[in-house]
Image (spheres, one colour):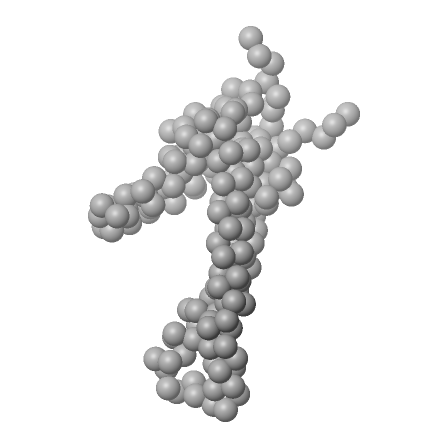
Length: 176
């Protein structure tokens, strides 16, 4: 029998902080693409924002869009986003979880492998896989899974996706 590597489950607050930090990091990663493609599109449909400064900025952005800068920024952002998103399902901890010394493992405290982590990620994000089939169903499942995160406030400290995937988030013990 394998000895548990982890014994102390992470608090809801620490898990929530990791989620917030991950969301902020992803936002920063996609910021170049937003600035170069999304915001200018929105600007053209909002004439009330027109000013000489905004017009000058839009001219610069159009130059970036037509040149390699815009394309390079979007490609680099996309690659970073893919790497960032895949870290948790492949290693058992997102960058924010690593910073906060958290690790996903099996509920018995033993370490998982990439297949286990990938299964948990699929369960956790199952609503995204339903979106092409039915936006309404995806939304309902997303609501259930989001509310299911509140289950981690309980004594067992397990969110709904942890219960379904037989996983838990643990504090990483300090090396002695």
